[in-house]
Image (cartoon, rainbow, N blue to C red; front, side):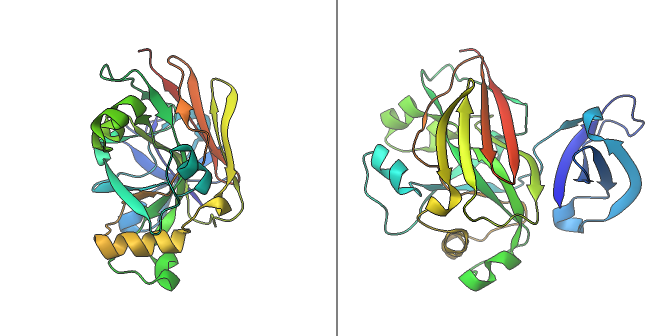
Amino acid sequence: MRIVRFTPGPDAGLGQDPLFGVLEDDATISIISGDPIYSGIQKTAAKIELNKVRLLAPIIPRSKVVCVGKNYADHAAEMGGVVPEEPIIFLKPNTSVIGPNDTIVWPDMSERVDHEAELAIIIGRICKDVPPERVNDVIFGYTIANDVTARDLQKKDGQWTRAKGFDTFCPIGPWVDTDFIPGTQKITATIAGEIKQSAQLSDMIFDVPTIVNFVSRVMTLLPGDIILTGTPAGIGPMVAGEKATIAIEGLGELTNKVSAK
């Protein structure tokens, strides 16, 4: 099922606090009580039409966003590196997370802000040292992400924290799909109407079980943690004032506008 987080319209009579729901038929949301990661998926009798809500980032990342670098061979090559022998991981702050249709804010420190289309894993329970064969037991679902990067600052700093850590630099959404199974689905990035990245999820060097096992051997994972699984070749600058759309076949589309410089 597809889990959404949203604020209802002012005429819905549901208040203005964010709510969670299950998207039933691409048009109707069944409202659920509490946070589904912590409370389970408990539907209420209330429903609301999708076109009467504002979708938010579908989960609340209370802890961290873990990212995998150079996880597609073609991207490793375009970055001038060799295929890594084990996952390369780094962190983005949870304050970088925004939702669908939110604006990616171009920081005044940077002249080049890039897109990176990625599949995101949502962790559903506290876990450590997860065996590869048990990884599905700790995954709540999957969503789409854009690992936005100030490429000039990445080059200047020689590391990734500032370049990838700005507020608004981790759009995710539009929902979390609890039934999605990564395979050969196509992942794309479309910038200002032009396709810039296109690959299959199966092109990843390290698959989902390998990634979750590796990360959980390094650090304890908490409910709501996000793991970005890497981006394929074709990264490049986004266009100020235009839209960036990341799509994964069978999972949906995540669109954000990029602010002016």
